[in-house]
Length: 130
Image 1 (cartoon, rainbow, N blue to C red):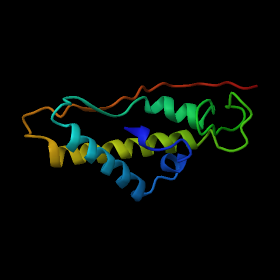
Image 2 (cartoon, one colour):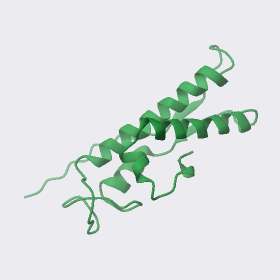
Image 3 (cartoon, rainbow, N blue to C red):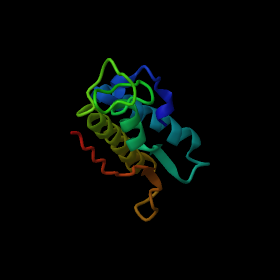
């Protein structure tokens, strides 16, 4: 579902405001309403960790923010010690908002499993510098 936001809108992820989460939830609402009769399993966000690390830690994918010594390229903006965590946090908040909407508005009953996921792989990265 994240595809609706352009690569230049990294503000959505780093400086997520209530308005941005509301935008994502409104987008999810349209998807649930228009495709809910044909879709039985939903994924709000895929590979949150890859998006956070690739975008804000090592700078390999848009918007390409990073800081030394973490970046795989010479980044001119970013803070690899903070931004990946903020990005992952805000993406999880967007997922939670969409899930709440699904539970309150579209889930048929509490007896039916909700079939909505956010794919996240937790990986511990250790870097040693001398």
